Length: 597
Image 1 (cartoon, one colour):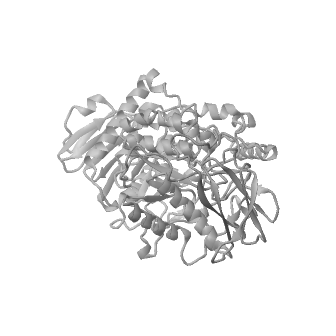
Image 2 (tube, rainbow, N blue to C red):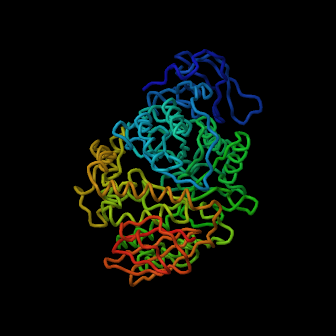
Image 3 (cartoon, rainbow, N blue to C red):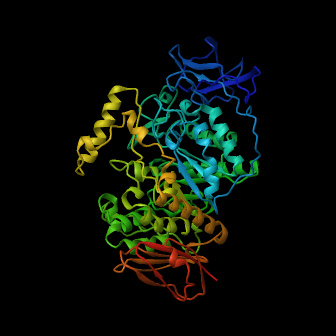
């Protein structure tokens, strides 16, 4: 789909200022609709060049440095022919919004992570928008989109994007994202976007031609680090902060999920994340609606969500992998890799994570071979500042065959997990299809156009899993189109399978209970847990809600403590009938949600 003039964008030709940062260039020219136009150094210096020219939305353009090839605009909003083609003019104020939007804050949110390319077989924004009614009916408050910035080829996870200001054309480009967000607002849903600031993809990255966007002073798993603290880094930081603000402002997003912030190497006194959080806070004040930032971080560092006034980074929340790992170990018994630290006493690990936020809070991590993390201040940290989940794109897709939790447990055993996620203390997040126990795999897939890169990715993934006993034929080929096709949701699953339909109804009820009974502003010190590692049961007291879970294959009687209690929902119908008095009898592999009255 090309970016051309359409009925939703203003089509008028207007005089526009074209700007580009190229501090080492001796001359720069704008190539607009095939015609060169020399550019002049911008007032104030710092390596900026500019020129005014008439152009309408859809006009193709790029920049030539010192007479070299024409390159797309680093800040271009659209790449109709992909990362190797020219940019197209987009008027960010030209979309005709149909729905007003006042925003939705993070406290009280229920997030739903989805991948545009596999949420539906169509793999487009418009295809995904057709299913938004399902999410509204489920009770979700925010859709969290995996990255949508352009990358080579059609299908991929999106973490190899190379144009942080633009939108992937096969998904529908900028117009498609505008339509999707507008449709979400029409259903009362906010939208959160996953953005990648720690690296660009290995193919199609043209930023180094323009300036010192990367540095060899630091290295990351992807190679040279983004230049956040060396010469020229003021403009590099402004580049990524500006991209974040543009998506929040122009597409009316509610928040951003920041990928792997531990890979942002920044030795400056003010970390990039603190600068970004301050800029987003200022934008929220200007827009008069709440905006938020969620970090993915493996550091277990309380400074991530601490306010800037307390020398923190000022982010609103972070993903909590410790919660995922304890849940996964408790239900599957897996202990390989990073699960090693959680598998020795998984219910004790789960209890600590539910009440303290982090499991690793300064103690020894056998997987890392060192101490890891620092404790959160329980009385000062609100529970919504940690995002809790039983599955994510990472935790499913980075398994050899992309098998989901429901494929390992079945829908009956997956139901108690849903109770701890959706009625637990943390901001809950579901991974697409989890609400009905989808068993379609979600596998690692790519569409690299560079044959050598494609072969290297395929061979590297097979080598990685060979170390864990997988043969090459057992590891799906990322480049095979069938790998992506297998990863698309099967929306008929809950229609064909009564157990999946029951799990979907259970998920709806749990979300409704959360919205109805959990007040905002709960803190970690308002969470209590009792458990028995040997008998395999756990009781979570989360504000006014109590979640009793029996993981054992035999019936168990669980203590509830002082009541009285009202039973709100149970995985086993007979457990819902008797009002509990100090204890509750649960069938095997079941859960009950109660209200302390």
